[in-house]
Picture 1 (cartoon, one colour):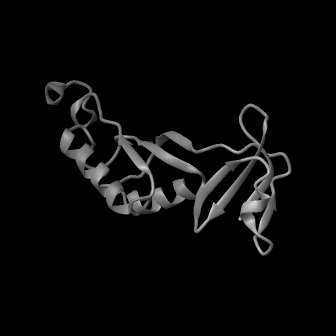
Picture 2: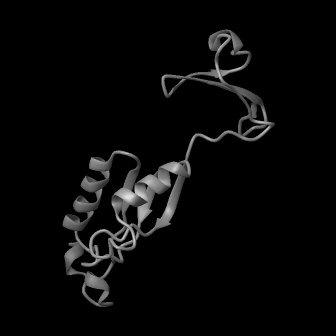
Amino acid sequence: MLLVNAVNTEGRPLEIFVKDGRIAAVGQELEALAGENETVIDAGGLTVLPAFVDLHCHFRDPGYTQKEDVATGSRAAAAGGYTAVNCMANTDPVCSSLEGVRYAVERARAVGLVDLHQCVSVTEHFDGETTEHLK
């Protein structure tokens, strides 16, 4: 697949050649790489960005997985062009420990779609007082 008539973040013309589902070349005048039966997509001057980071998301895993979990949230993020997410701590139990962080990060690694960064409650279980768990 060849993407033509795109621009980078500086407004410069850009073409992207994708082979076997991976970006094989980025530049200009890549038609020779594509071959005659290749799909060509005209970006119409749209800006091509490498990826996005969601700084505030709620995957709700553990505890509220009926709303969303790491797998469904990762799929949605990846489909929208996000490669990294920061998950909030309002899970059940509240993520206020290294154990909770490890759980979320390991789940995301198993899914394998986005880099997950787990936020932690400053106070234990959102109690507004206890900070001993941070020591």
